[in-house]
Image (cartoon, rainbow, N blue to C red):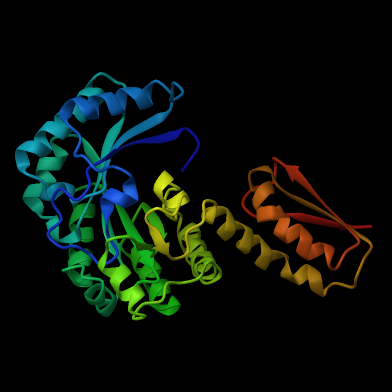
Length: 335
């Protein structure tokens, strides 16, 4: 997320999903079991606002379910609460997540009237076989049509993708990433598939009919996907599930590539790839690498993994941060 940009999350788990995707148990993933009342929503927003620096770009986000499938009167109640914070100048806009098959022109007109600015669709994949095996209940064409319609109505488009679902391959996931770019998404989220307790995927896992990606595999896949989105200027809001208490304690996580610092692992791997040519240089005693300040920790690597790699080739390895360097530009000095 960009500095100065905050999303206040309001979770509405399992309220209106017509299909139970094989990977999904939203109540356990989000850590939110009860549907929030209108008063709950107000308190959630006010609590977050009390901690956010003044002058920040603030959005209210309705996540965790199929928002546009909720009873229309309840939608109005939730959106009215959120819009009141826009009208009093405390919040800039509203965003929400929903299913691709719950988008049409009437829905979009309704959302416009409440100052919704961003609609995120759970695309997951643009491979129809992956969608079928995952029990999504819609095909890729539905996601394409809904995305086009969302853009036509002037909303910012978010497209979430999930890697490592049944039938998925790295090639398929790369195709999905390119399709997200092609559809003009402003933002995205990348989730490795996890085996969560009380899901159909758990049953397949125990029957040895599904094998989740390893941490190493998922980092390798996401590394390439991440660069596709970066090159296209798409904001990557999240990489991997949030480290909620349940997942950290493995109360609900049965298997799969969950890591509390998954995004850091990915960015460190990108830097590792960048540094590989340095290992082909004639072995020197010392190397000084100057990197952008905002990339300093990622360049060194998770648990100093990249520094340790370079130390196998150079006697002394030192990293220096430079605020004037941008992106992943860096300078190397040998001595």
